[in-house]
Length: 310
Image (cartoon, rainbow, N blue to C red; front, side, top):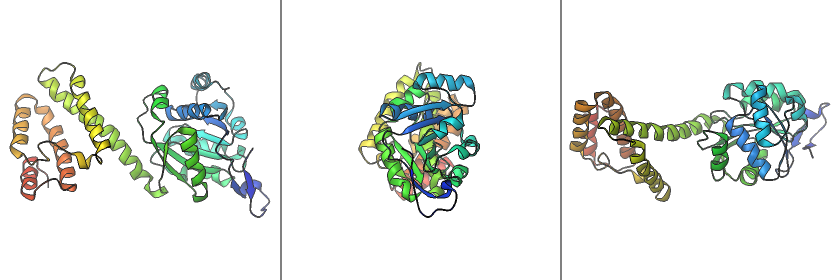
């Protein structure tokens, strides 16, 4: 059933306070066939929600998603009118336009959500203005394709931004529909939430890329195979023992300035193009070590002088 309405009549049902349907056995429409949106739709389908259809910017992407999800391609307005939950799987910059397009087709109480990390519910204002309930749901996970996203999203954290009276509903949807961990994030905190996620994901990849380049400079074949198990072990240590800050190790953390100096001398001699990236990463490690209290003051000062860090 569609969401019930409460409050005083104002002449327009969509402008009344609305309560969405319980987050079980929902009718779901996917507008936009992005990786996360498509994966979320499939996870909801596997958890007894009904996919009424999909629409996308291009017919080919809509048809591809429809085949994968086992649902029809239908016009956005038709899908929204039949849904209790609308998933906007569109690029970040297209969220506001998508919300505006579907707003007049919404039933009061229908929940509209997007998956962008840096935005809260502000881009969904058009939907909220015509009776829709709005939420921003961002998974903290690397999703290179739909199949991988379906595998990785269960057990992942989701940043949830919505009105206070929708929080319990959204938390239950994340837990039961997507098998995830809901984390409430204030509207104004969404950019920092997203910054933490992308810094971690892309920072890990960038670190690996630098290490691989250093090994390649001395002729090591398949450097990713050499460093991959190390990266896995480092992540396991962080997860098991209190996080990245608590499990920092290595010559910078130990205050071994001569070792870092030898690294730099070797890089200048054999791979000068990697000196600046190494210095940048070493300054990042130094800052983390200092912030978490790992370093003695004298060691920190010597390392900062060597690395040109103020």
